[in-house]
Image 1 (cartoon, rainbow, N blue to C red):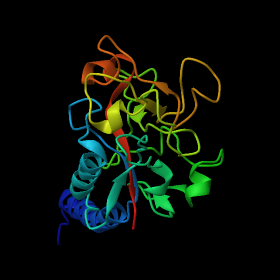
Image 2: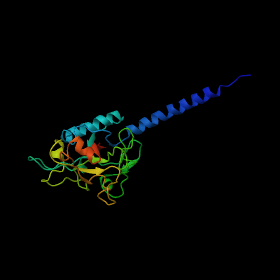
Image 3: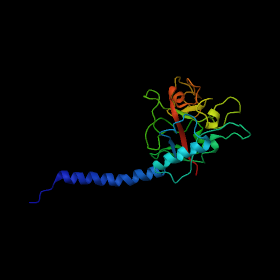
Length: 226
């Protein structure tokens, strides 16, 4: 009588399931068009300007399997030194955008900036498909740099709200949003994903230590712009 090794059969079956699932996960990552950076460049809000921020998005998208797309950081800049302001909403393409798990977070720019968008702690995932620590977690990393008003437009020139257009880790401050849509109060400002409050800290608001002191880590929203 032929004896069947059930453990070997089950092991083979499990391996087959893993192998079959792998291409699906890889394909899902390749279709990713939105993520929150798992890390910042490490110099606080000095991102090297918009170009440096975009490069950070592009680098992390590459590690996430979606590097063939053109990635832009969701950041606004203020008019300064003869250069016009840049609106974050104008940098990110037309949508729709989906995270690393294939969940759509917004169908277009208008949807993204409406109350019906699908940005939550569970959907604002990193390029690795991981949840970003939010309020109540240790450490809290929910403050995402944007320098933007709630409608995705830049602030007027004057009071610095972009850490000198993302070139300063010392002077200035930057507007941040809450990736988990939670804050100290139960109001729309605390729940804002892109325009919740100004950064602040012992050094002002732009250093890595400043950003960490109020629940941030120099993280960015990244969107596939093509």
